[in-house]
Length: 540
Image (cartoon, rainbow, N blue to C red; front, side, top):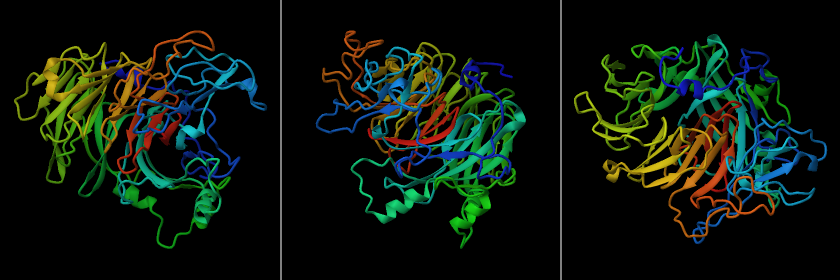
């Protein structure tokens, strides 16, 4: 039970019960996850995602503020053979408001969460595949509150499809015993087939025929996992997990990663036979370690209550911060093959700690945000006491998300007010942000700058939307989506223009956290009610 802060209640999914479901390919081996591909291999090729929409446009350097709106909102009645979806089913959005065309066969309009009018009972949101390079989702059977990328040895700057990504995630089950720590390798992630694409490339055809694959290492975990963060240390990657029962655990991932690698001479066909085969060319390889392959290295129970804030230092391997709902921040230091955690809090906020972020280049500096609506900068070299720098009213409500840019002296923040703000650290003492955007209609739950791309930011919010921004785009007076305001339909008048910095709005039901893949430019991963998704838009 929570004893402080409201993040817990807001951050949880409304879980309908159940446990990790068995997959047809898993033969009931302790549950499993299902990998849905984007249908981009062959026409009519199976699990094409129908309930998501998104939009975006390719960025032209000479016309950075101009966008091509691609997401569509269509009436169910306009598509034969489809039953109407209920309004609470997931949909999606994109820059540029509006409403559906008024007659069958009319031009579909772009939908923007929070700006466009609510869906009618006979409407649903439909994914515009031309707005995406790829989209794949691994349905975990239980909602996920958090995930992080596990770096691999496949190289940096990977843009060529198909892709392979590895993530570590934690679940939120209806009972403490139903939860799992998941290590997932999503392989052969192909893109959407475009109309002009050629079928002449035999290698590409072979990849598409094979379909995406999911390799899974799964360990039981007592209680939901509020936050998970992965660091590459000398002995192998380590995951830090904030558990709802009020403790932080460090888990070694090396053995589980080794189990996901096929043994020498292993054949795909043999794997498929062993796992029950695949459907429609989409094979699932399931390996259940039964908890033995994700051993605990260290557990700290000194918080005495649950929390969410967790961050590994990017400059000192093994150094970790954890913050709880009572406002206490503890510093972990690597010592002799283990960790020493100070029993006395390194910092105290006086309200729930929602987020912690180490500075990317200063080994002793970190930032905190929480239930006091403030942003605080701390230096671990200073004696315990008040923060060294503080902005007392950074947001109207809790500060839920922080991200420190690795390329610019900038800090991004997101709060309960649904606002995304950018702070110039050279002017932090002024207490004024240098940019603020209010697109989302719900609290911001996650925020991250794209690694290696100056000025590109992504945010997730409780309005089921993920937005992508390019802060290098400047106002030019043209505005984005002019004439498409809240509730506006054909001929209903103009509304407020959207900021030109907005690149893309993606829709994911009850999305809680997003992470850019540091080795695959433009690939974004999300943890949500329906599992873990990996996608790339045409805008980034």
